[in-house]
Amino acid sequence: MPSPLDFLHRNNNQDEWAKRYVGNKMGFNPESSGYDMQTALAAGLERDEETGHMGSLDPRTGMVLKGRQHESWNPMAQTEMSLGNTVEYDPDKGRYFSVQGGMYE
Image (cartoon, rainbow, N blue to C red):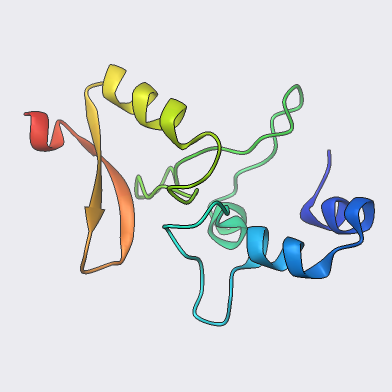
């Protein structure tokens, strides 16, 4: 199972690794193309054995773990809509969340 360190070793590019997986000094940017690996690991998420991907949402809170520019943002949002959920920005928390029903309720 690959880890963020595998990405670093494969590409030998610390700056890119830090941008995508760790964030900057201000933390994860929900408008970026990155992934909030720190929260994903804290939530106990693991990589899918077949795809190598991790979940899009924190199962504890429904918080979206990928930035809006992430290559799989749209499929995640479409999946959430098909489940009757809405992906909404919470300005108080500075993050996107999948909300049951949400604005379409």
